[in-house]
Image (cartoon, rainbow, N blue to C red):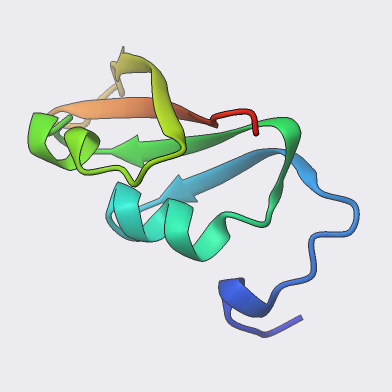
Length: 88
């Protein structure tokens, strides 16, 4: 299937939505807001865990955890940012 993520039908919705080198956290949750199930999470693979980027999430989302990743034979920082939509 080829389509923009904003138009992707999430039926049924997903338990987890994974992003790698896709967009800012703000853009990811804005474009993909319809994809996770009620108790689903976003998982964003990022290089640097930039405080400013995490603080710029739109209303309705919480950072659950930031996990530092150690990737063999790879220089530089890597992080997994776990985001949960707030319950309505």
